[in-house]
Image (cartoon, rainbow, N blue to C red; front, side, top):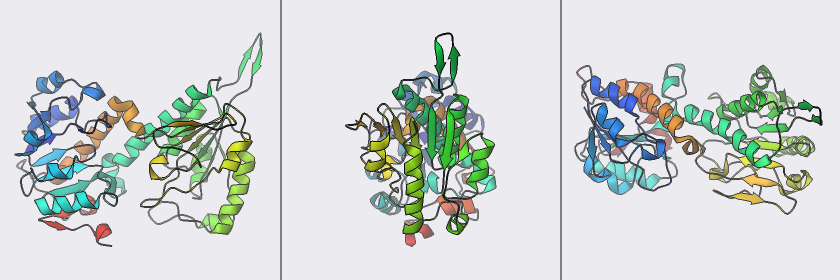
Length: 376
C-alpha cells in the first residue's frame, strides 16, 4: 500500500498524523510511505527522522496524494486536495463532517473514501483507535497547567516559616475524558478539587480521583445519560436548579475548567456573566468548549479575555496542538491501530466494510455518501 502523510497547510495545526516510530512500522510491514516535507516540523519531528526510517519526502501535499492509496492527516486538508487523489483511495483525519458538508460532497465527487476519526464507534475493541479520547486527555491536562500559570499563585497548601498558603480551589465542569484528566492533574498539583456533570455515572469516577462531586441529584439527574455514554439535554427546571448550585459554588473557586460538549450541538452556557462577577480578581476560567460556542459567557475563540472585575477567561483553540509532540505520538498510534482494518493480508489497501468501526467512521464510498449519520 502507498501511504502519504500530509503537512497542515493552514498554519493553525502543529500536529502530524504519523511519527517516525509509526512510519518505521509501516515500512517494515512492506508499505511505501511518503511524508510531505515539513509535515512533522512543528511537532519536533524533522524530515531527516522520517528519511532514516525509510520514508520518501514529497515537495507538496498535492504532489504526494496523487499515487496514494491512503492519506493520513490530522484535519483532512482541503476539498480541493481531494480532487487530486486517485479514485478508490482513502483519506483519514478529524474531518468535522457535520460542519464541512462541502468537504464530504467533494470526497464523494472525487470517488475518495473519507474516514472521520472522530466518528469511530466508542466500543471496547476500538479504544486503541479512539483519537478523541487520546487528544482530550492532553487537553484536560493542559487546561489545568495553563490555568495555573495564569492564576499566578501556588496551588498546593504550603506551610512555611513565613506562614501558611491555603491551597487553590479548582472546579471542573464536565467529566468526560478531558474533565477526568483535568481532575487528576489538579489533584496531583495539590489543589482542592471539585467537579460536576449531569451524568450520574461520573459521580463515582470523580470520587475515585479524590475530588468532590457537585450536582443536583434528583430523578432527572439519575436518568441523564444516553446509551452511548453522552450527556442528555436537561430540562429548563433542572438547569435552573443546577445553575443556582453552580453559582454559589463558583464564587469560591480560583480556577474553573469547563469541558461540556454535546455532539453535533452548540456548547451549553454553564458560567454566566453574573457568576463571573462573583469571582475574586485573578480567578481563571478555562473554556475547552469555546470552538462550539463556549461554556463561559464572554469567552472568545483564540483569546484570553479579562473582565472588568479582573477575572480571566481563556478561550484557546486546539488544545492538543499546544502539546504537538505528545499529541502527534498518540494520534499516530491511534491510526496505526486502525490500519489493519484498512489492509488485506497481502498488505494492499482493502477496507473491511463488514467491520462496524469502518462503517461508523467512513463517510463516503464509490462516489456516494454512505454514513447513516449524514443521511439523517
